[in-house]
Image (cartoon, rainbow, N blue to C red; front, side):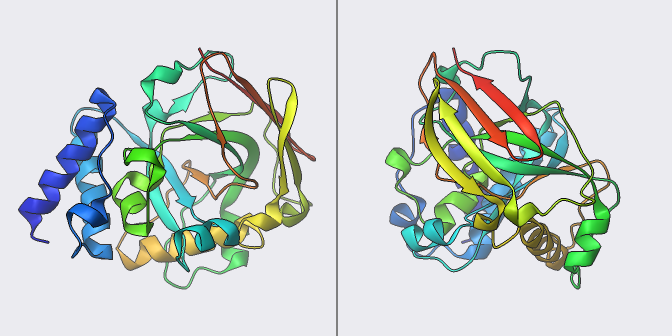
Length: 260
């Protein structure tokens, strides 16, 4: 796919954010699309947003669970970019109609205290780079109709990003077994999901390693101060106006997302 066509597809994705009219699956419209095309479409959207004054605050990793990879028929995660206006205040209701088909998933978030750049990043390197760990609820959304996505669709769509709510409590990684951190997800007071850190590539740190090394191959580093969402600890749950979600993580505390 030539550069001009990539840019045109990226503009269609950008338009869908404002019109809230989803697109057909990318792989149906462009059956010859490649992995590089999909990331090129994603990067074009990032550059356009940065050009309007938005700020890159971090990255997210998606498709980190075996269940999601099997569902989409893929054997690898993907990544997207987090911008400043994706981050929402915990106490402020989020208008559900800002999104097309939103869903919520709990994640163990990282804030980095030092840069990471692959290739060659190890788990020990990743652990040393983590400044703090905190609970989060990611609001995922798809600009592809009916969530009819494959790997290339979600990559082009910035890893199906929407927004994120961060919990207030932060703690150091020291002494924390991330794989064993359990989570209970509640929707309007009813339990709708359970999981633990092991659902994220065996340990969320493995997702951070994958991200640093994958970005490094593209000449990009994770920077100190950036936020990283390593992947969901349980299945995503649909959102409607009026819903209140609470994710409670062992040893990390809780985070609440309210929707108007």
